[in-house]
Image 1 (cartoon, rainbow, N blue to C red):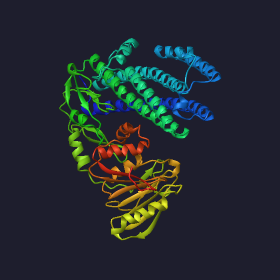
Image 2 (image 1 turned 90 degrees about the horizontal axis):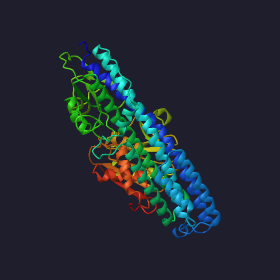
Image 3 (image 1 turned 30 degrees about the vertical axis):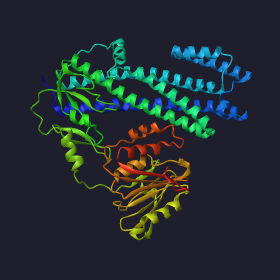
Image 4 (image 1 turned 180 degrees about the vertical axis):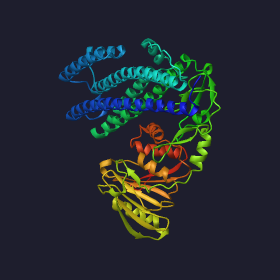
Length: 532
């Protein structure tokens, strides 16, 4: 049998996996739009009911429990009838339609109950649309992966194969079959997440009224709840996409009489421990089991499989790896396993000349130091650095564009004046330096965000990293290496503090980071200087 060497399989199957990942990312963009629309609809409804409560001087929990007036009840019943019609047209769960019918028949209903029913309606329609779109996406993903895999194997072996048309019912059976140990398929997960979303929306709505939160605060809190659910949807898309891709590859391998396969992990610093361990292992097809001997091994798993042939001609072959700084692909020996790559290219990195680059703080798109003004202020006594940084912090706190101030280990002070949503730091030694920056009011009262976190992870040898906004000072000091920490993980976990009266998502993420022992973190209110 004429066949390509192992480098061919590695490159081609990685290319297929990258394509599958990009398809998942593109579909997630559509889902994000659906979530934004649902969130906007929730906002419109809450604004209307809040206004009515305010007009009746009953913006309180007791007021929210009062029954609707006759004209309001008539209007509500009319809206419910529209919901029922929309539900029937979109194949919404029959149990929910029954709840709506029961609500439509009731002669008494409170403001709070009306608000809860309307917010749930948006969640039900959103989940129905998501399930339908996900079904279509997984069907297409399976077919694409199956046929592209067959094509690459045909090219790699030099043998053509007559492939039968995939039966749509077969794919439907596959995508409905649970692959994880919890016994849930993608549909189960969508509706489980929907139930969590509804419960969280209802809880937040009730608590907002009990706390006497104003309209803006209530809407902001509900929006944060929607953001958590959106992030869960993203993880679901990428994980289920990886699972259906793996199933397509498996079935294609079996249909084309591939007897053995090899695990191929992505070579970068974000590779999980289990994928590091599984990289390069070879298994018999009869032993193929998702989560145990085949990917996905965990949520957001990026490992894939390649057909394995006994091939003695591997000298000089290469496999792809990814440069963390540039995002570009480079090549390493094909027989190099993950641990070898990590030691050579991460733990003992090869020193290469690189163009000087700036470090960005903020949410803007700027990556060019030309958009930031650099000012050398002078120097301060090294022993007075903390007092000095506090002074500069006050000077930039209320500025409408992002500023950063660096006091290096020798006491030299440099200020950087950036744009409304970002500032770049360049041409300064950050080792043992104290760095502070402001978050303008346009960004809201927030702690260290994702860009701040990435900056800190890149410069863990700072003496301390600080931030100031209109209400708080923030301070963080690194205690241990954060190279393996993923911001989205700590951000999502931070929503366990959602019920706190002063909850703020970025602050919660930093609290999680501290709980895990990576940093010491402080949030101090400006007026009282008391830690929160």
